Image (cartoon, rainbow, N blue to C red):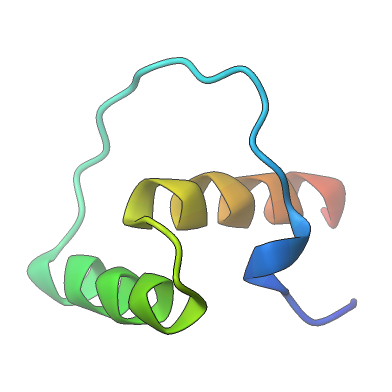
Length: 55
């Protein structure tokens, strides 16, 4: 499996959903997003897209 690259996945049509995350997960995602200079929302979308393409 290729390494995840947060910058490689572009935004598509977006629908709203609610996710329940632990504080630790939220903080870790926020840190990754900040390092990649993207929003947490964009990071989550790209992570999901990556996971679906690499199942």
